[in-house]
Length: 127
Image: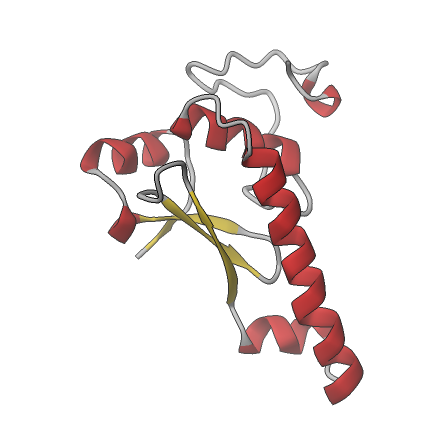
């Protein structure tokens, strides 16, 4: 099932020809990230749950620091670029989540085939 945000877009998941430029960000485009994760990992039933946990972790990390140190959100993000890791099924592939919601594929924790596929899908690579 394609999320409602993408219903009106002619998307063929198998080759990712898009009419719209989506960002790899779990806050601004979570549906897109879930589609890409499912393409990389196969139909991964817990992808959306992992995204929800990452968004909650970002919230839990940023807002207490904002309250206690009176920093701006941008200062907290700059000081702590990576806050969460999503482990793919089996734990081999890993996805680094930044405080601003950007997601990157870890090249250190992947097979050559999965790294190639992530690059073909346009996912940013963490190295």
